[in-house]
Length: 145
Image (tube, rainbow, N blue to C red; front, side, top):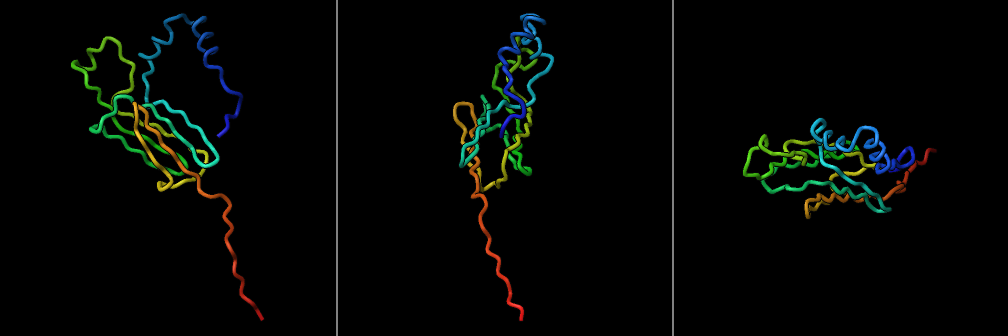
């Protein structure tokens, strides 16, 4: 999957925003616009695509579902942190928690049988194997006489 325009230099963008709006801008933004879904990276090789989805703090008791819709994967669920205080009592609050949903487009067709998942060190790794492309299908013609 190629980006349409050149890659965005996020470091330079952040520095410019900070120069104009002040050093506390990004910290303030976490409170104004909370995270709605987990962050992810996607890369593609000749044989597969791999999604690396951040889900730190996920436990076996947290409901998390991965479903396919066309050429997209939808991850949804809920992460419940185990703090000894209520969420309203947190002094600073920006980690992903609670209900979430994220739609992730995949740059090729696949089925659920093509997917393998693993969870390790706070990352959900989703490997989507590519099917053989352009498989020739024989055509049998009847003789007409």
